[in-house]
Image (cartoon, rainbow, N blue to C red):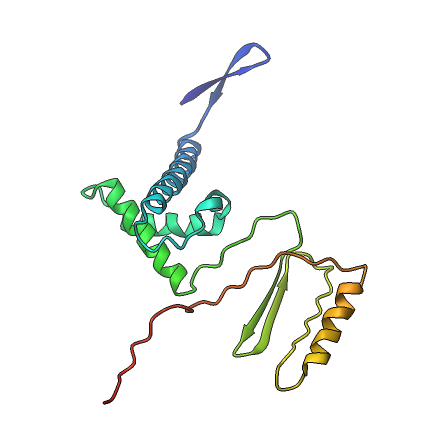
Length: 185
């Protein structure tokens, strides 16, 4: 197959082999899916349909999330099912994965990103997007540090001119899920 491109005012013919054409088609299909997925999710988000727990504000930047969604789509797509129904099923699956903590979102930023995982009150892992970061964690536990000690820690770090307060987010997977408890009378 020949495709035509303009280069410096001249038309150039480029021959593509069948394998190259298939690869280009697959890339276009994936790109189209990602655009449709983002648009459909934003529609559902605006309507309040589903769990609405995926990042609608920066969905386009969540490449791993989009990869996972495309993989689900490829597994369940069927020519006898309406596209939006299939897309809704994929979104529902992704929202369930997010609810269960099975999706890790990537914060797209030019700044260093640090993640500290605290499991049952114990720091179990720390990650950084910059290998040259020195991470210091100070735990102020009420059974060990009194109010004066806590205030002293905040004072020391607030006066350190090499440090700047920064934005942070706190994620607690499973928090807010209802737990059914039997009440005995």
